[in-house]
Length: 220
Image (cartoon, rainbow, N blue to C red; front, side):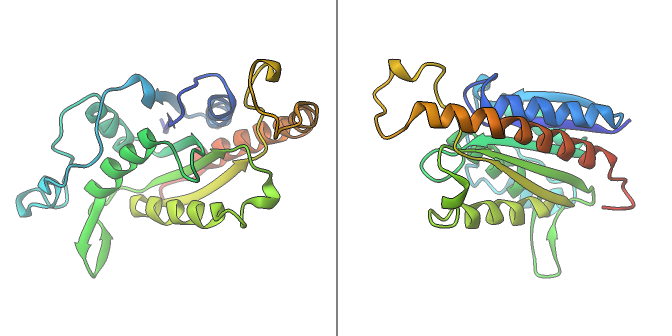
């Protein structure tokens, strides 16, 4: 059975990012996949420490991160999956620090220092990326977000599979805007946008999950 694992890089399990990841897994399950969600904020781990154990000659082609912490079994399960769906809110123009540390560990252990090939692994894992953010879609290019997302997509191609990403913009940050000092935002406008757009974002996430689960090894 195909296995799809979702990685939640955000601190909230049931808000924008968590909801979209759940819908993506619903889509994967509709295509017959077994699914799992990992919430990075529940784990205790660090980013890459440049020990280079994964690049030693004796471990080439089966290199794995030598660090031992809460992320270690997650990395093993990711490498046993047919697809991974990663979600993160955008903080200070990039993904969360927890997700960045996860990506360091996952990608570097699969990255080859060889001009003939980029990847150490022979396995092909497809990837979907889901980003949630407060800025409107029209500002993605102006703030450099599109370039960031394309950079992440290039990194994920090291896993050898297909890569796609989606964005959910102008998100509703609070359940009650009256409790927070945020005068730059018009709560009624953001609520109207959420009611109109977020269901479509959820459908896009569902469709992404279904596509990733349906991709066969021969297609990747």
